[in-house]
Image (cartoon, rainbow over all chains, first blue to last red):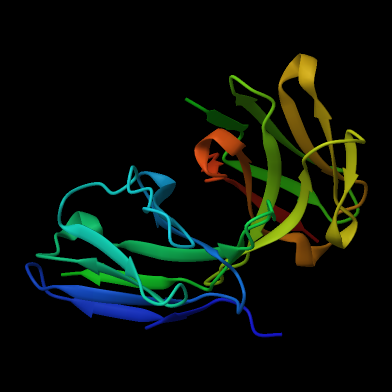
Length: 113
Length: 114
């Protein structure tokens, strides 16, 4: 079946602009995670959604970062007033409630000029 | 807080040689342990995982790993390297108390020489 999809695959933006990154999880997966992969920091957890529960936002690096998940499916990660240090690959993963394995999408490569 | 240490950011082996990628973790409770592989410009693909039960786990592409609680280690091995194994490998841990979110090591880039 279809895996996790993310769009866009690449995004170039200017410093100070807002960007939206989209994640479509595997159908039926109730849990969704966002991670960031950067040269300096490696792979870091950002935010976690599980069903209708309040999201775990403990990994968001600043209040410029936010995310939502509509209808328990598609998720959007928004970065406001982008900075050069936001340049990274943003990865989305999904899983079922009882499944320990997270299935990753191909990522969105963000470059802030 | 959990942490994962991967010894060696870059490992180079000859085709046909043993692959050994090291991973040590620190966790207050027995964690779940994972190895993921990332090929250039792609997402992460699960190689294998340990949750409970047998401590020697086998994964895809001939890889295996052994969970050693006393050593807090989860090293990844493959008896004979293939050119197609060249990629970056990440060890990760998670536990129930952290919503299963993954804490990753810094990664090890594996190069396979002909």
